[in-house]
Image (cartoon, rainbow, N blue to C red; front, side, top):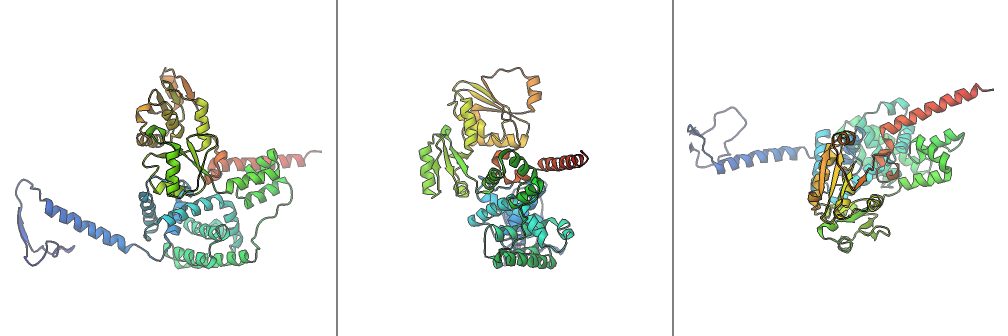
Length: 459
């Protein structure tokens, strides 16, 4: 390729987006010739353009953790995300969240720092957990019920964030008002910011005078259950069920437990040669508060600092996994022994599968079946990370169909079928607002109304 360029400038000083002819001539041969240096410069030039375009979209005034929290809450409401940010992708997870912000709001904020990630986790989890109470307060401070019912989704998420920060996190109120007003103005429009300003300032005054508009626990059992459901942010049907079976005092204790800070457990990956002592030493180096599990030898309890563990790469490096002791107890009941063939019938995402495979000590096989292809893929990836892919056979299938087509024998069968998840509400706050459970609540309300109407007609 023959190219003539002005000697006084670089090849890119004359490149532009206009239709004017470029000030150089070239004669192309019939067959293409690689010009690595020239192509590399063009790639660098294009990357520079993209970088400049990205920089132009950055908004330095908007709080990054609030922007990410608002978008993530929006995605949770629409069924596209979970409430937690637990991920072993490290900084990649933060970049992924900011990409969602850019696609949804049309701008980026400054990059998320570790402190921002922890705040996002606290705010998103808390706003989901306390959604019923927050919505009750927002509705109470709107001029009309219609204003709340017709509120656009993003504006509602911004208000939930502000209410949660003021009511539950006790953040400096006027800083919360200022930051959320700014987010509403930039992400939506000035009028939305004015609305957020007015509602949040009302909340601040009520909070300072200890006069939040909370429902009173009075009336019949049904009315009391509705009041408790708002105050403790649980579905009414749960409150009524637990009150009927346990009594009101025990039901309140259970709801307080669900609303408390969740405790997580780490299981050491013995298949890669690590011991619980090794894991404890790493946690001490990271200054993460912990205590050994009193009932499971491979587990360590962690009350706070799980994001620190994740950011340090302990999950990514295969040192440990996040797994509840209750799941470990299930495996201890199965009691896998070297040389056995075990089938896990509802395996994904694979915590119990991995633990069983590690206890086979390289001798035997765990057949993992699940109907969810995406979650099964996570199991496969994690098994490689834990050096257990040789002891696990993953099969994408509906167990009912697989059993009809296959005639295999196993030493042991684990069938831990999907359930309501009520036992893990402290860790999975979004489960309490499961749509199918909300349908159940409506059915119970209808049943109550029918029984009430029928009892009124009885002599």
